[in-house]
Amino acid sequence: MQIEVNEDGIRIDKYLTEYLDTSRSTIAKMLENRLILVNSKAVKNNYLVKNGDLIEIVGEYNEEITIEPQNIPLDIVYEDDDIIIINKPSGMVVHPGAGNNRDTLVNALINHTNQLSDLNGYIRPGIVHRIDKDTSGLMIVAKNNKAHQILADMLAHHEIKREYIALLKGVFLNDTATIDAPIGRDKLNRKRMTVTGENSKEAITHLRVLKRFKDYTLVRLKLETGRTHQIRVHMQYIGYPVYNDPVYTNDKCTEFGQFLHSASIDFLHPITHEPMHFEAPLPTYFQNFIEALETEE
Image (cartoon, rainbow, N blue to C red; front, top):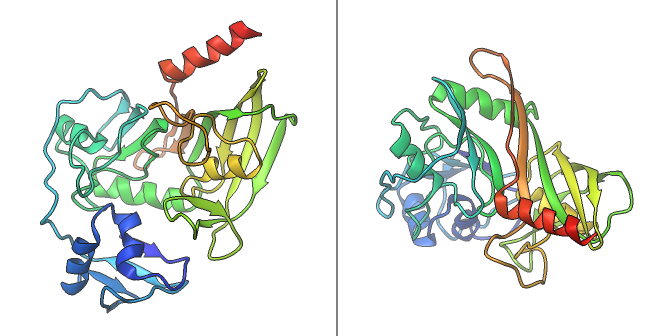
């Protein structure tokens, strides 16, 4: 696993807690055991990362997390010898981390099959990309390393087309829009991302209005890039945050979390090269909320 640093002056153990979903003490042990390298060299846990550093995770430290199969129902949209397409429910964490090694998508996947790629380590078997806990919808899972590597390369070159449906707060007046605004870590709250010109990466989101309601707008969003929290950050930036988002609004939110759904995905199959297209309907809670808005009109 490789991480390209886009910030300056942060201790590496603190920086990596947000990427590896593990504790600073475990990261310190990985650094001590030369399982983490910076620009191909070993560093101490107080090393301050620099913009442009390349962090490599070259081994695993297995002391803290054990992962057990769990018989959790999976909504499998498609499966063959190389890939699985999952419709993930809102509220499900994708993979285990320190202090949270149960009830994740990975626990369900390893119960479903013992054929999963291991390129991303033992706590992320098969996971090519992830979506936030409270974001629902389509994800690609790789069943072998060859498919995983090809899919990862396709993601890096923007060859996998993903579209989302979101309910925004407020009435968005234009029918379409493109948000081209770089995203980086929020210095005031490191659990959040923000639009910034400092230590940031290009981020482009295309928006199309599906329906307007009295106080909300239902939109379809297409990503050109795949930055952390990209849609949620961009929607807040333009003044129409995703409804019920506990991180990017100041509102009291329900347990369902943000109304954001990975609705469709298009790509060429990594092995057969056949065009693949999948769609997933809105979660029941999301759909019922929309129907309630329609009855108010």
